Length: 159
Image (cartoon, rainbow, N blue to C red; front, side, top):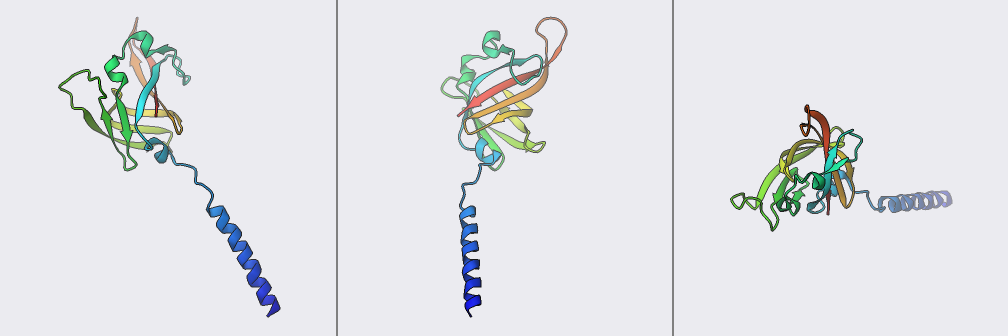
């Protein structure tokens, strides 16, 4: 009986220790991070050498109208989302909100967006996804001066 009580006591101590480990806070998933709250444009530009940082900002190029800078994108955990035109609309006839559909791809290193956020859609490489920052890169070809040039467009969003 003495050994049985010792065995039960040891089992309970080990079990209690395991319960404490289960109560540790869970790291948020990428779905948790992206769907936490709405995202708003922070910065962006053209990455000519495709190294993950933009070489020419959209502001320098003057290609983003102020009416786009107050737009937001809200991702929901179920794969749907909504863009909101913000207080300044570029075109009064465009609806205030528009739906989009999204899904992670390539082991959550990329995201596919059907529709558009901040004027872009398609597949994006995720450069950063944190509690407060979403940085996306999209390969494209542009013609500024001379022949078409393959570049990446980078868009940084923030909460």
